[in-house]
Length: 132
Image (cartoon, rainbow, N blue to C red; front, side, top):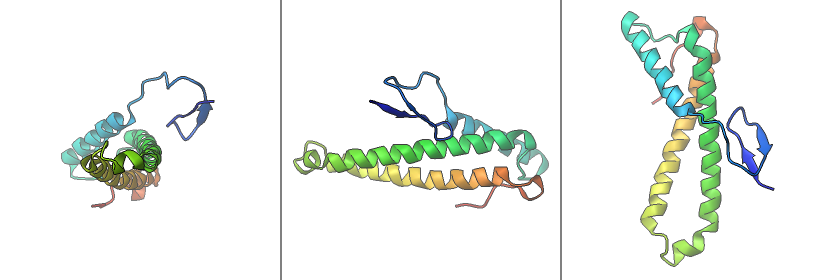
């Protein structure tokens, strides 16, 4: 049995095929963030427009879930590939690059969680957090 974890709200389906619907939550998230920046540039406010709050929060949560699942899978693969790392078949530079990628993905998922929380707040206290 092949388990395919869909990144839509953590639903798990058991099917032998890969996902059939093309979804690009990171691309959509970045497009929505660009729209927030455009609106903020026009009126000087950094509040999130009501029309973007739900799509931003949903895409941020999906990106977070995809990254978390991917990092877990990479961890499993690295743990099981230690023999080929030890004998030099896979170079240490590849493992280092994966480590930096995982660190950046972890940082991005934390920001996605903050962004999703900000988008789900009441409009009176909404705004992009100062996360550095």
